[in-house]
Length: 327
Image 1: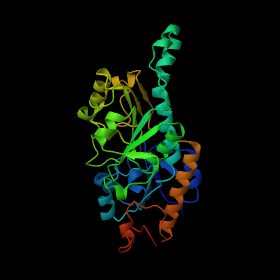
Image 2: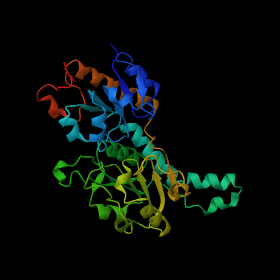
Image 3: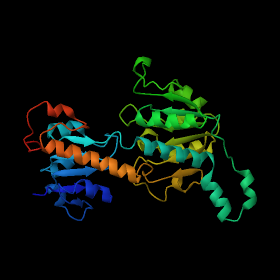
Image 4: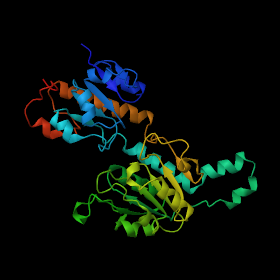
C-alpha cells in the first residue's frame, strides 16, 4: 500500500524516481488544506517545521530534509512527537562549493556589471570596472565544515591565500585540519580578506553575526559571499550601507533571511550584487544523490533499521514511536 508522501516545495524527477516504490509525491501548494494532515512522509527544504506544523501533520512518520542545515526544523518538537528527521549532509558539498566559487568569480570579475556595459552600448566603460584577480588574493572562510573546507581546497588550487574562522571550533584542538588554511579571529579575518565567504550554520549565536560594526572593519573594497544562511547577516540595510560606504565593493548571495525575497528589494536591484534563488547547489548529480540518500534512509526507518543520516538519533535509543514510525 502506497504511503502518503508530501513535499512542501516542487521536487525534481529524481525525487519521484527515488521514492517510486514508497508512493507518489504530492505537492503541498496551499490549495489542498487536508494534504498535510494525511502526510506520512514529509519532504522539506526551506519550510519551517515547528509545533504548528506537527499539530496539522498528525500522521507524520518521517521528515526528509533535502539540505544540510537543520535550523528550520524544531528537533525538540520532533523528538517529543517521536518523528525521525533524515537528511543528506554530504550530498551537496561539492555542488555548493563550486557554486560558491561561481559567485566569487562573478563578483570579482564584475560579470553582471560588464553585461550591463555591453547590452547598454557603453563599450568604453569596460575600462572603468573594478575587475580583480583571484590568484594572490585572500579568501576568508567563516565556518570550516564540509563545504567551507571544499571551498578552501578549490580556492587554494587557484592560488588564493586562505584564512578561516570557525565559530564551532574556537579551540585549535577541535578544528578541522586543512594544512594550507590559517586560522584567526573573526574581526581579524574581516580586516584581512579580499573575499569573505560564509559557510556556518544558523543558530542563536551566529544569527546576525555579520553586522554593521563588523562590516565597517572590512578591508576596503572587500567582497562578501553568502551561500549558507541569510540570517547570518544583520539585514539587507546593513549590506546596502556597506556597499554605499565602500566597506564592500560587491556581494554574492544565494540565500536570504526571508525566502523567497521581494524581487523589488533594492539589494536585488543593485548591480554590485549577484544573487541566485538558493539554487547554486541544485545540480543534476545533487538531485540524484540527495533523494536516493533520503529514500534509502526512509526505507531503513520503515523497516526498523538504523538510517545512515538521522538528525535526531536519540529517539532510536528510546521506546518505539507510538505513531508507527518503525516496525
